[in-house]
Structure formats: C-alpha cells, structure tokens
Length: 121
Image (tube, rainbow, N blue to C red):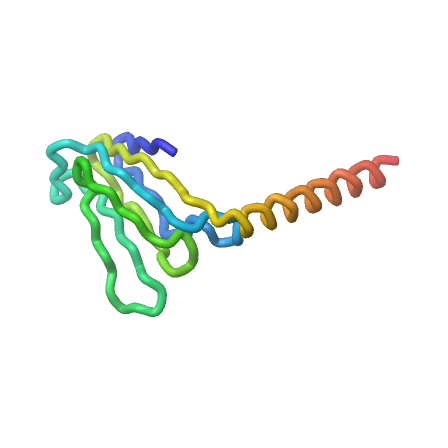
C-alpha cells in the first residue's frame, strides 16, 4: 500500500492492522520523506505496545524502515501531518491464518447471498 497524507492535518486514528485474524502477521513501513522536520510538519507514527505504559514515537524520515507485529500487540496511529507525507506499507502473511480467513469470508459471503435470495422470493 502506498500512503500519501496531503499535509492538511490529515492523520490516521489509532488502529491495529490485523484486528480480525485476516492473516497479516508483520507490518513493514518504509518512509520516503526527505528533509522531514516533525516539529513543523508533524506526521509522527506512535505505537502503543500492548500492556506497556510507553509510547514509541517514530519520525517518518527518509529511508527509514519499521517492522512490527500486525496484531493487537501494536496499536498505532499517525499524528496530523502538515506537509505531504509518503509511506509504503507491506504486510507479510501467515499462510494458515490467511487461508482460514479466506474460507471464513467465502462462507460468510455465501451465507449472506443465500439470505438475500431467500428474502427476495
């Protein structure tokens, strides 16, 4: 995923990349922001490790790569950015969890379609 925050105070609320066991296992974020000054441009990534009272604050500096667990162990957010901010995110998947998630999605989708058809008859 390529993310571009337009610099108008946009950010991203605290979240977990894989809250529902969709297979995402590791999150990798690569920053593309040359000469970034977090004091004037904002856009800090904050990670709230599960069970800890500390917050990891990471500046989105050019050529920086972050790697962290995608599940509930690492809720994170992007604070408002006041300059155009770029990042590339790649997720590594757990094959078993991903296959189970796909099967769950297929069965839910089929059940929902069946319900719609039977309701409309």
